[in-house]
Amino acid sequence: MKLYFSEEDKKEQLNKVETEDIIMIGEYIEILEDKYILSGAAEVEGEKYNEFTIEFQTVDKPSENTIKEIMSMEWDWYDYIVY
Image 1 (tube, one colour):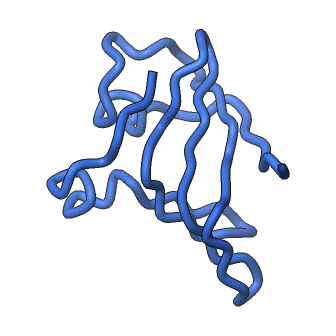
Image 2 (cartoon, rainbow, N blue to C red):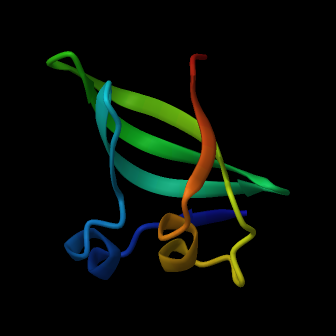
């Protein structure tokens, strides 16, 4: 199941993720049982990547599978996916 960020989500910056290494602007989240895949564009050390993905799992399970709920959860772990 894929959830695409709406214009309202983007205004609230729910599609923006910053780690110590990257700044990512998500296009959509794919739900895979207890994990999620965030896909979009990212800036890594000043370089822009248009097809970038992060796989992550939340500490707790969201009460519902909505972008707002998923993106407000604390992440247990994450990993960059290279295709």
